Length: 220
Ligand SMILES: [Zn+2]
Image (tube, helix red, strand yellow):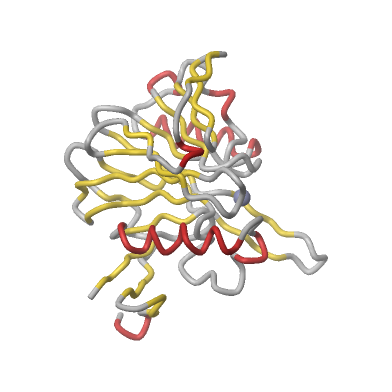
């Protein structure tokens, strides 16, 4: 394990979790990765990619990112395996507006929907302060946190109190555990994203990235 640790900045190391570590039980909220996102460069210069899909259960049932529209049946089945239908999801958060993250919003017409800095319920959009850098708190355990850089309007979902500590469902703030070669190329503002990444590494114990397995953050 130790040799896998990577120092990302002073006193902070990150270490990958395995495919068997996709559930983070907690009180009152638990976090489960339903689909591990991927990004696979192809020989013809294209990429095959889909975003990570994460379910938060507890007093509220929250879906963070929906994957691309081609994954519609997978998503419905993954929810069904947990005894859930689309109508049971009270909030859907799209970490940003890319098609591989918000491709199935139409399955959830009754949910509150947050995509980037927009918060809507049906056709009603609620004023909020995400664009000014303020978190949108759902309760004392869970909040939607602005983390711009990959796009101009990215958000993460921060869940406190799991058995693994604070879990951050981070969208493409992080591509994967070892994304040093890739995230800047995909960023609209790498300097802004770097600040968002450092803030995440200061506060989260586990980060669930947009296109790879969760990883743990270790601070000295
Ligand atoms: Zn993206």
